[in-house]
Image (cartoon, rainbow, N blue to C red; front, top):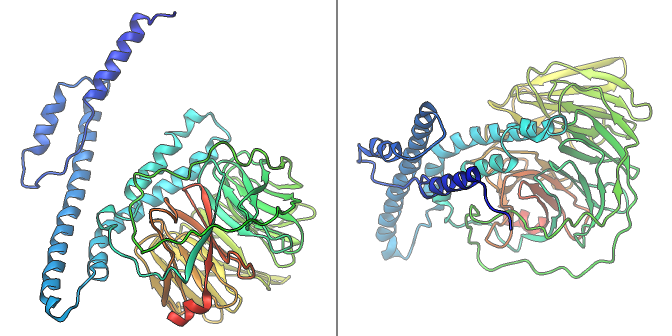
Length: 522
C-alpha cells in the first residue's frame, strides 16, 4: 500500500487547516463600526499563501459586498413593515396588499442596476473564454467556466431578498410542455425548422448544436464541427440545412437528415399555485450520461465561412436562402454567397462588437445590433445601392433587433428596455417597454405579433406591440429556467409547443401559450 510523502502530508494538513478557518460573511447590525477591524484582526493569524496586499484588497471587497447586502436587507425589512401597517389599516374593509406591486420596484431599483452591469460583464467574459478554449489550453482561458456562471448566479438572479413575492400569470394561459436536456454547457440560441419534419435546434457553449424531437424531447442529431462555442443556429427556409455561428471565428453550413420518433404522451407539468422560489441552492438540470451520444453525429460542414477576425456571434439566412449574413466581434457583418462561399459585402460602421443580426422574412433587409448602443438597418433591395441607417435609441448594449412581419423592428437592450420602431419613420420608437432586468435575444410571433422577452434574471415576459404586458411565464420549484434565459423563439404552427426558450441552466423549454385566452385577459 503506497504511503504519503512528507511534502504531500504537509500540504494536506495545510489544506485542512485553511478549510477549518474559511471565511464566512455574516449579516450583522450596521452600527458595529469596529467590525472591519475585528474581521481583519481575526484573519491576521490565519495561514495564507496570498500576499498581504492581495488579502487586504479581498477583505475590502468582501466588506463592500456585505454592506450592500445589509442595506438591501434593512430596506426590505422597512418596506415589509410599511406593508404590514397598510394591511392593518385596510383589514377593516377586508382588503390586503400583496406587496409585489408596491415594493418590488422600489427594492429592485438599486440592486437591478448594478446586477445588470455586472452580469453583462460576466456574459462577455464567458463568451470570450469559450472561444479561447478552442485556440489555447484551458489554463489560458482564465478561471473555470463554473466560477463565471456561479458568480453571475450570485449577482444576476432574482434578488433573493424579494423572491418570495407572488406572480400574477395565469397558469392556464402559459404552460410548460417539454424540457430538452442534453447539453453540457449553457445554451445561447434556439431555433425551429421551417420545413418538414419540424424539429428544434439548440446552440451551446459546449461546442455542439443539437436537433430535437419537439414532441418527445429526444435528441435526433448532433453537430460537432465547430472548435468553439456555438453561439447561433438558424435553419434554411426551404432545405434541410442549418447555419451555425461560432467562437472559432467561422460560420458553418451543414446538412441534416432526421427521422422523428413515435410521439409519446405528454406528462402533466402544471402545478398548483404560483409560488416563486429562489434556485440559488438548486443546480442545473441533471444529465445522467450524455443523452446525445447515441444520436447520429455530423462532423463535417458543407461550407465554412471564414472571413471574420473575431468571434462570430450570430448568423441568418437572407430571404430565399441563397445568401447568408454573419455578425462578429470584429465589428463587422459579412454577406456571403452560399453556393460559392464567397464574401459579397463586408458591412462596416459599428464602433464596438456586434451582438446579433437578423434578416427580414420577405425583403432583402438586414438589421445588426452592437455593444455601441446602436442598431443598423442595411437595405439590399436595390442591387446598385446598399443603403444603411443608424438608430440610437438605447443607452447600453443592444442585445438583439428583429423584424416583424409588418413594417416594424423591435430592439432589446442591456439598458432593460425594449423598443418598437416603425420602418417608415425610425426617428423615435412608437412604444417603449421598461423592465427590471437586461433583455437578451427576443422573438416576435408572426400572427398576433406578441413579443417574448428573455431576461438575465431568469424571467420570460410577454408583451404586445403597444408595450402592454400580457403575461409572465411561470417559474416555480418544479419548472422554469434556473439561470439566465438567453433566447426565445416562436413557432405558432406547432400544436404541442408554440414558444421555446433556452438558457444557461443547460436546457431548452417548450411552452404552450394560449394566445386567444392571453389576448382576452388583456
